[in-house]
Length: 138
Image (tube, rainbow, N blue to C red; front, side, top):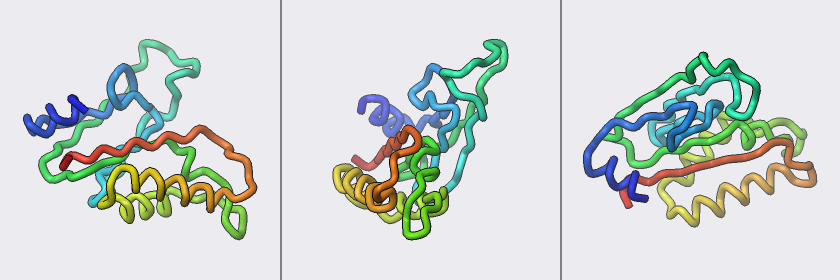
């Protein structure tokens, strides 16, 4: 919470980096909710085998006009389910985030979990899922 407050007060640009930062998820996507601007991370994981001399890409954006943003892994979008047992897909996940971004954090959490469980149905969860939402107005 302190990091968000400091960024909001200073209008400093945020950084989304692959290693040793608040956004330390190389496969993460940073999506400002209203703009749906996607920033793709590196293709290699933090826990996998990687040449230590190869740096992770660093991405920055300004918080001036952003009210909230999300950082997430590919696990939610890659989950199989629905009537035809297909993947949820990134487009549908982004639409879900846009539809809940005006709600309270607790309501967002409930909606995102409910949507996932309804989609997944009786299928097993196939991947780890991480969704981080940050609201800069609170």
